[in-house]
Length: 320
Image 1 (cartoon, rainbow, N blue to C red):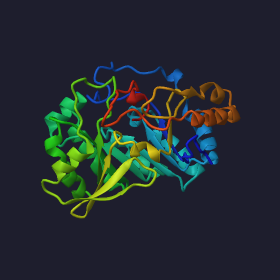
Image 2 (cartoon, rainbow, N blue to C red):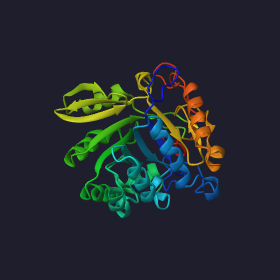
Image 3 (spheres, one colour):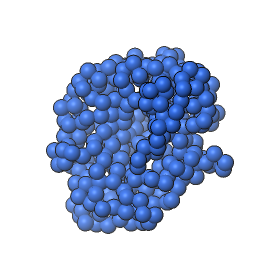
Image 4 (spheres, rainbow, N blue to C red):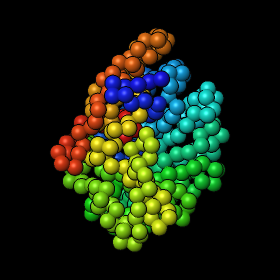
């Protein structure tokens, strides 16, 4: 069992298999050139799997594959199958922007994937192009449809932004409801890589907008997850609010980058590398580094409603 210094059980590993992305979203990496780490700088899937097996044996029960955009990493379905075959009951998911999903949904399903999250911030083609700096909406919607068709469970992630999609929150909720998907509205997490003029909507503002049409009631804060669940006239949706330290109280996750950096907290830039140990096949040393990362895991982030600070973290490297 993996326990951090604050007594939190750590059973969730997020693996960023690439920092490459085919979008340049305003809230993430709008000015980053379309380049990427050379392949030789990344851990191979076989090397990542060495650590994954050890992490599962130590107590990891949930794994989410992220990026950048994970579907840009060649043979991702093979890696998914490796993990699934090692522990079939593992909660295994991916987060994707959905642009390539139509082509890969069936392979992912066949590899053992059961569910995924797709980023969808708008249903307006022009807004989608502005946010992603690319014409993306039709491909994303086609990817969502194909994922549902092959039997994958789909959730939508929507970053709520003032003067961009704040007038669409109700429409996005209704789109998700019509497809029997859960939507989760996410507070914008301030970071130095984002477009500087962005302003996010906080939880109460999101609820106020949705309340214009729906009777919104709190159901519960999801156990061991940074999402609070609400009902809109019986339809269940979520809000992820990192500006509340309730976000951190039950944090059960660590992150692994494609280059082998183990990251204890999304906000902070600190990390320790397992790359050398894994390259040598020294799984014991990698697990010792994991234990040290847990000892250094902070109690909470520095996003807050009162004294909000901007993170230096590059989310595209860590699957934010």
